[in-house]
Amino acid sequence: MRTPLVAANWKMNLGTAPEALEFIRTIRRGLQAVENVEIVLCPPSTVLAAVADLLHATRLGVGAQNMHWEDKGAFTGEVSAAMLASFCRYVILGHSERRATRSETESDAAVNRKVKAALAHGLAPIVCVGEDLAQNEAGETESVVGSQVTGAFAGLEGPQVAGCTVAYEPIWAIGTGKAASPAEANRTVNLAVRGPLARAYGEATAQQVRILYGGSVNAANIASFVMMPDLDGALVGGASLTLDFVKLVEAVAAARGGG
Ligand code: PGA
Image (tube, protein in one colour):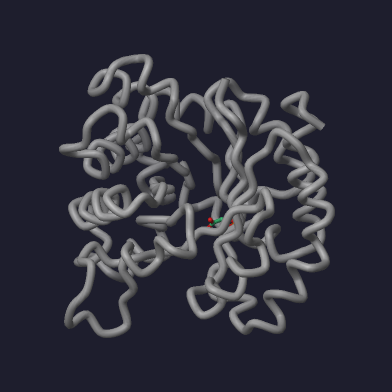
């Protein structure tokens, strides 16, 4: 049985220490009371250290929103897995908001290098995949998502893949208030994520990989996603910035029989 995971993608919000820490103080008690759900906050890199410090020795995990694949060097503005490893347990890789504007550093091959670098430093990647509206309407969802998954994990061994998380985020659902249908999202991840992983690494490995849904998730709709057999939680943007985030996590626990 996979433990549900809810990851908060703050994006470029709450990036100063006073606002980040103040917000966490308001939600921390509520989140810590929820059992059997793993919770990870992914703030901007400016406050990662402060957030990690505040959450040290709590059940709440910390993740970064991106990293470079090299350990160090002349890469102005970049942060490496080696640098994140002391603060973070997780790192989001290949988010569509980055893939859209940075083809060189966010291609499937680049995401693959990042996944390998993250694993080498003990970070658990949350690999984002998802089709855009035109691809969805053209019936290309499975092939687009399937090739993103295959590309991200190319050259890895089964045990490494088992420790990764995939976030299926249809681009047309992100920040639009128009979430995918839970049944459709489950069908997509079954065919285009767990299926290819099972063929490449075996069924047992594929069953260990946690798969999240992302895209306009909120406290009201999350339960319908996590009740799907192949969906193990959510990557949450907008709704992770409000007090409703506690309700959202509580709804996951209730839906999975843990709260
Ligand atoms: P959203 O963002 O929940 O605001 O749609 C999700 C994401 O981009 O990870």
